[in-house]
Image 1: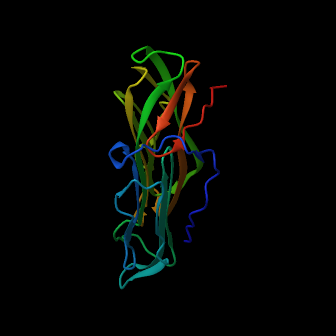
Image 2: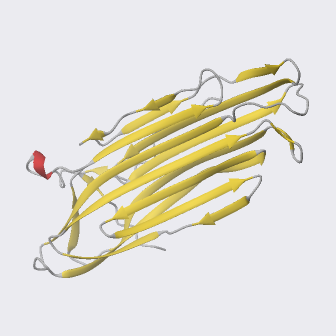
Image 3: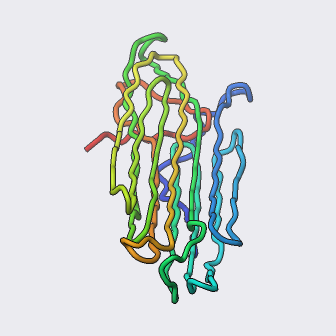
Length: 259
């Protein structure tokens, strides 16, 4: 099952602002992992932790295989995963698929599995030309998760999970789907931060998607299919007039008021 990473729609722009004058002032990085499991040929691609970098990507897309049992026939399995990480923007996708060729009840094997993981961290300095240092301000960040694909059928299990930490504030959005336990959704779209002019805020975002399918379960039958593709973005929803954010990464976190 071919999985391709694609260039994400650019809502972030590189800015000359935000780069500190010395290496000591730089605090940002990215990493990405794509992992597949379940049959020979699956593998893990990991960018490693890239300090002071603004992009990481990973891809694991092994060929699908036919698995045969001398007693229970044959089934086809296919998996894939990919991820991309940039400051303030994460993308991850995964798929898992299995179907019967001529399988009979009792066919078993390791569950075809895919996982994409993208992570970034950054540091923001709260600045103002009109308010004195130490002035209390409240900034609201958007934890925006756009789900492009989230489909499942047959024997499936998986999730989409985004966690965002900004200073002392945090938000988590999670969607799960399981043929055994049903579907859940919990979305936390904002992080409200009370801080002061001149303060620094650490930012840490992690996006994970996982998909898994199974070969046989008597109540349902043979095989399944699950696909997950999500993009998470960190934007500024509310910020006082005259206040700006300078990032260590040089990324301009876009101001996008809620509709």
